[in-house]
Image (tube, rainbow, N blue to C red; front, side):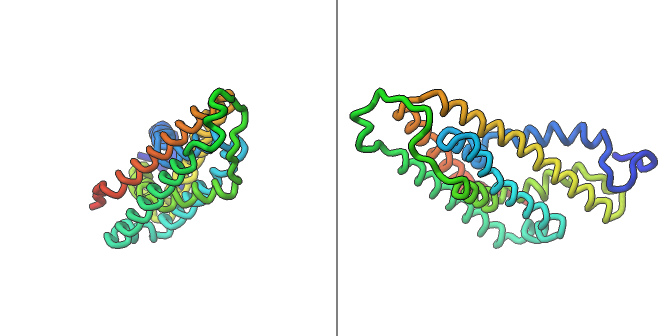
Length: 231
């Protein structure tokens, strides 16, 4: 894949980048639990808090990438009991978070008296720290994120080079993917903020929360019931 006379070992070629970047953007932008959280956080807590919360997701991804480069990710990826434990942990968290979101979206006592009230800023603001924790746990407890680094990145690596150069390429691809994830996650958070800043009715925002919670439950149930075959 890489012309070793033109590119030093460990350096990504333009051919690699031309194939990898569009694929990475497509994967990063796809709807999922974390992007759904970013959208909801943008609606409920504004663009600033939603953006700061993304640090939790990227910290989890950075840890995963480090483990994969160190070889520990491969070990977990080939250990069926460990993988299954992580899968059910992630599913349980997503379902629990979805149920909590749905419960939080229940009608408040004054909503029936002010059904026509609009607002620019939602009344339920969560701290950026709390939102970042949710992002971190959602990303870290989802084995599909681990599969992303152990299965998605390696095909783009030039395996004709030595192990050190291969490790460097894997790290560079991982960092590049995280950059793509940052850009697309900010788009999700910004979209939520734009929608939430339109002065939506309380009932509309409550229904958005209920839909978000329901989708999180669906994602969690799908994760629990899916057969993520890795062999």
